[in-house]
Image (cartoon, rainbow, N blue to C red; front, side):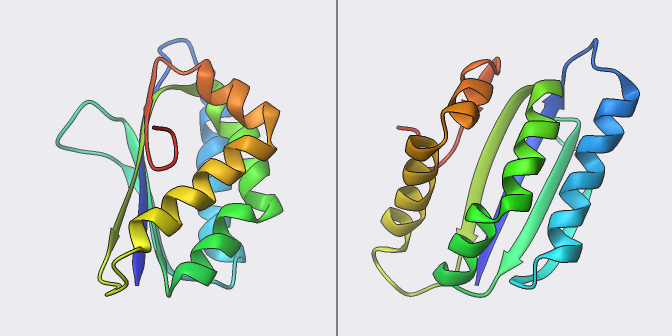
Length: 133
């Protein structure tokens, strides 16, 4: 299982309706993508972030399907403009010693093939996550 999590802080001047739309998109990822086993979208406590989302994905194939889904691209375009800072993390019990490299490759390929995504991430105050090193 791979548990993919994001944590975001929202821009101080972000319009509430745009923030609500971004959160709705995050919820839709969990509701509409069959590869998501379970998910949680909500307020984030214990750090500098305002909201977070976590998606449980069965394996690397499900992870790739989730990351490359058109709805994920729509979510990025709706949500990232209201985000100030973001981290993306993965926790897994997959015994494959190369699972981290496989996760990073999915991210780096995604960034390489999507100029709009790259631009949105470059405009964040800070971003940490797989495939961006």
